[in-house]
Amino acid sequence: MRGPYLMLAKAKECWEQEHEEREAEKVRYLAERIPTLQTRGLSLSALQDLCRELHAKVEVVDEERYDIEAKCLHNTREIKDLKLKVMDLRGKFKRPPLRRVRVSADAMLRALLGSKHKVSMDLRANLKSVKKEDTEKERPVEVGDWRKNVEAMSGMEGRKKMFDAAKSPTSQ
Image (cartoon, rainbow, N blue to C red; front, side, top):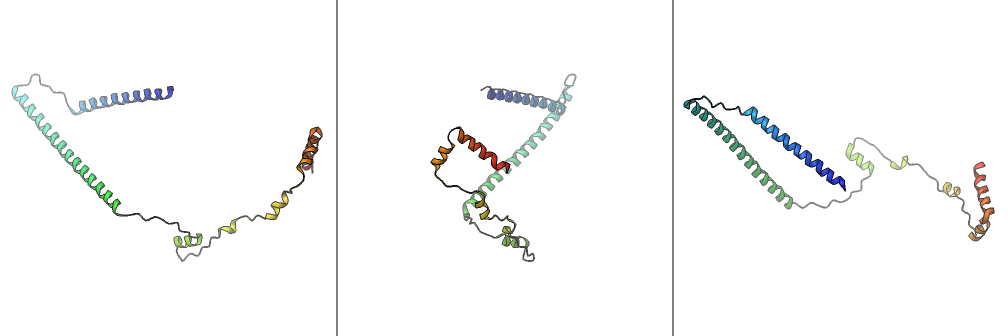
């Protein structure tokens, strides 16, 4: 029962660590990109020039942001249109049911290699032959009255006979 809770606690720890790392990265990036402003000791005309510079930079950034948003909207519209086209094409064509085709190995090789190569592949030639007579001779089946066999094997004498019978075939 503690396993899932430990996993959730570990996941929460990892998420918080990632969040802290993102914030640190953001602060570092902003520190690199944005220099600190020194406004102390500047005259009125110098402050106005600084404001004009900052406004020009803000305009450039806004134009880039607007261009990127326009491209993104255009791409999402195009993706949506292409998805609709794909859905329309899927609906128009009915897929035929596939049928199983029996092809021999020789015909398949001829189709793959062409008619120039005459390769015959007899799969049955490599199989091991088994004689049915040998398997029947290995297991001689004794058919008899099972009650006589049970009576003969009952008690300690029967167990001794079974023990002796099991010993004799291995010693031959």
